Picture (tube, rainbow, N blue to C red):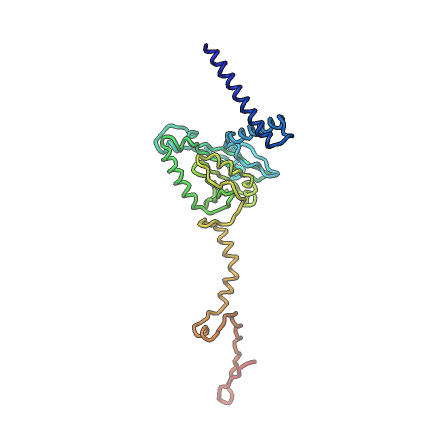
Length: 309
């Protein structure tokens, strides 16, 4: 009895699917015209299935690193890579403590909250260390999730006060004031509360931006529990956004650029009250007159002076 019911359900399912396919095919054929055949219908359905598969593909942090620029190579990080930058032998790193351990003294491992993945990019003697840190959505929605989000927000707020570096496809990167490991630059960015990116390198802006240009910010954004609208759009810009902290070298460069104007302003005489009333105008300061040459001598008991040469 049980087998006959299952057989009847399967038969009905096949019949329903076939009826739906027939109606769907006839509908599409009426739009596509006489040339639209069964082969065209199968190809169209297959493409839709492929599209769905791509949309539901699980994204992994390991796949989110940008491709190496032309001429560069990349590999998984090893301890010796840091020595390429610092020039010093590696020191034993202390074991990191997870956010959950800090909040509640939990014995949870770092992988419970913090999943950091590293890549090293090399080109001759140039090196860029790249880390993407990902906080799982379960850590934000489970027990203690509010505390984790608060802790992450506090850390990101302090780093937001660091000098601005660049905007890459809508994502802002800052540069820390202090040198990493005593010598290197540390470039950081935060995408929501879950994703942070860190670059350690000695390279210049152009080299760093050449690598960041290939970063798929839109794909990273889709890994967030709550994706940020519009994130991933736009190109690369080092124009200072409103409210961002400028770098010290940018401030110095701006000061140097305006120095000639400041000197010219100092050379112009200040316009007094009476000169403004009677049409006095600003202009360059008149050339200073050379001091007059005065020669004096005693002639017949009297002092006589001659002005000029």
